[in-house]
Image (cartoon, rainbow, N blue to C red; front, side, top):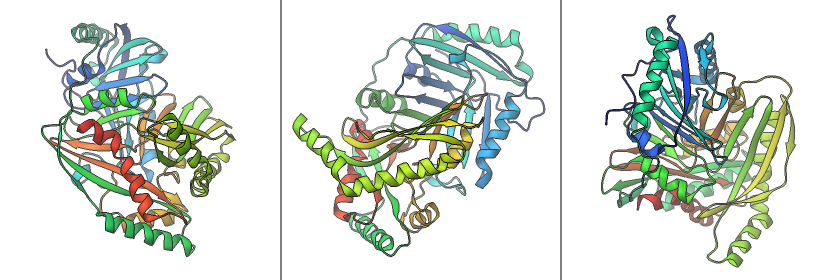
Length: 447
């Protein structure tokens, strides 16, 4: 079967000729894995625990940003692209820009992250959306080909091609792991944790999140769409994302943590800090959850994250901090505090993303001191790990997750990332054991 995506014409907001037209129609359900496998070039996927799934093929528009102004650059470019656009689609099927950014604003693409700039978002040429039990097909075109008549014809032809795809497709087996390599030895990492604790005790900072990178050599090429289908079964309450800019290296993951969701003036976010394994029995599981609640270290870490988020939103919204709960996943459980807010005025979701990133759950307190420790300590480039990934639309609404429980796949190698929050009473040996749990979501699906 030929690709359901035609030749990509990528434009940017700098092009004076940009004209954007989108059309959509309802279609029978289709396998998102089969859809993504049929794409050439850029492939994107966003799936939330609430049931929304958006998959994209090709790039009608590709927006990038660099340096400290990267969010403003992307936002302004998106406003230019959407100005005067003909978006005759149902609300659920509206075109969305999918992408994310690097952890540090001065990120330069290289090595593992050579295909990922400081910030990049793609508006797919072909978009599948599953929402509230309905599947929609959206086709977006730009430039000379962007007339209602040509886009409607393209929509009909694309619908026919997608109709050849199966409604369901087995997710397949795992590729198998030949070998794994940690980027930092246990001795070096625990020494780094001990050093961070000393800096905390000296008053230099309050908390810092230190991460590890682990590479896995596989028995064959990795298919990130298959891995995501497997992760959907294992972690149905997590987000899932795929960002593959050019059909080669892919950044993907199944993060449990929402950074922010904006709908109109309603904001939802959360503090997710502190981890424990799942128990072998219900009684053991409950005991481990109770230890999370009773741990002074974890409660301190959780309070730091929740208070930082509240302060970051307080200037633009009325904030309500909810009751703590336990977020239970297949192999790990976390302490969670939901946070809701009502904006005083209209805001773009990217402004909230910029205000909240990095939360103390992935950076530290104070942010500047923690970032300096991360740069001094971690012997690898975080790239897009632990950074915002998500989507936004023409109205500035959108949703972003924190890009943890994530990895970069390229050929027969997958590089995974995991981190732990370090506070004054952190024990280096215990932190080592805890951070290993966070590799399991992806590593288990590779084996």
